[in-house]
Amino acid sequence: MRIALGSDHAGYPLKAHLVPFMTALGHDVVDAGTDSEASVDYPAYCAAVARAVSSGAVDRGIVVGGSGQGEHLAANAVRGVRAALGNDLYTARMSRRHNDANVLALGGRIVGTGLAEEIVSLWLTTDFEGARHVRRVEQLAEIASLAADPAAQDALIDRLAPGATARARGAGSPT
Image (cartoon, rainbow, N blue to C red):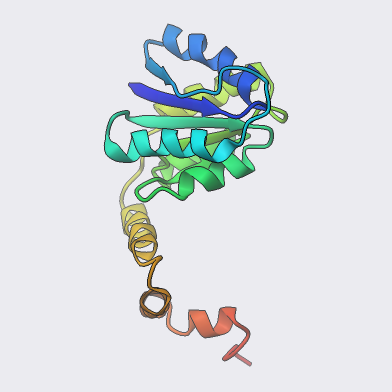
């Protein structure tokens, strides 16, 4: 599998560890940077990984930061990406089985190298279950496709779950 891997300065040590680990597993690893622990802003590195995934240049992506939170958000800003924060085995597995996640975010200040190896191995070998989850993944893509049109997004949400937008705003809650 061809995998893009990127990090900020906080995730750099774990990223540097994962490159040879994944290569030894037989994967073609594309290192999108950063290349040291010198402070950098994570959004561009994570978006570059996400763009490589969404364009089809790579099969999957992994982004690493201090907690993985910002990296996960940055990757999800790219259309066609389903990034999941997977700092434990269960969430990493379920991100693939139920959400068909194509980018994994890890926290280098949270996950040690041994656990990171287990998470990455599991995530890369876990298949998407499909079935009822296909419909949900398609709904995610449809909602994201309307991001520039809030009214259309609200209409879609209310078609999928009648009254959900009003309830979320505190109006129309059931009694």
